[in-house]
Image (cartoon, rainbow, N blue to C red; front, side):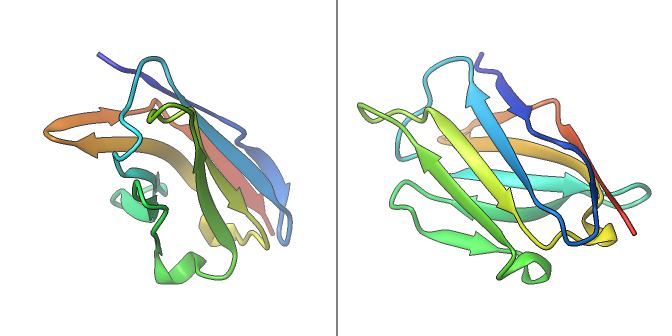
Length: 118
């Protein structure tokens, strides 16, 4: 069982930046899509950004132009997945989760809290 470990969350003012990281505890195929989700208080978890093995990226409309997802790895494995978040807004507040879903194997991290103050 692979665990995903997120880090980089925190408290930031409106307009600030944070960089989240996600590191797998074991091997994840280099072609597995990797995603970031978030869940705001009282709301459902939503997809924020996704990058596949060819580095094709998709973003939620609410974060386009502000967030960037990236990944690195060696020897066909995933080393780290990043989420660079710029121009943060109070509505970006929530718990951010890293996810890997590939060939029926669905891994989630424990989440990292992001709080944006107005």
